[in-house]
Length: 74
Image 1 (spheres, rainbow, N blue to C red):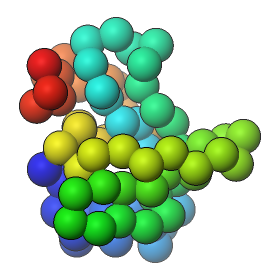
Image 2 (cartoon, rainbow, N blue to C red):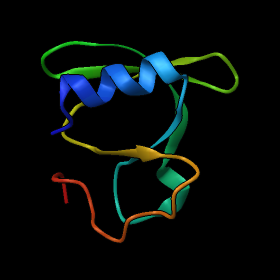
Image 3 (cartoon, one colour):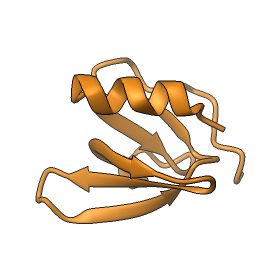
């Protein structure tokens, strides 16, 4: 699970993140971290829609190569 410190760094720097939900790259979510709680993270996508995702997914900066590891859900 992603730490509060990492989420705060992404939010403060305005880093676009990739949220890897499963093995299919088409299902990745791209956006900016807006807020988070104990179990969920709120991501604002490019179309300004908000998505509530579980913290157990894999989060990484969008400009980095996609990690081959899958989220804990798989």
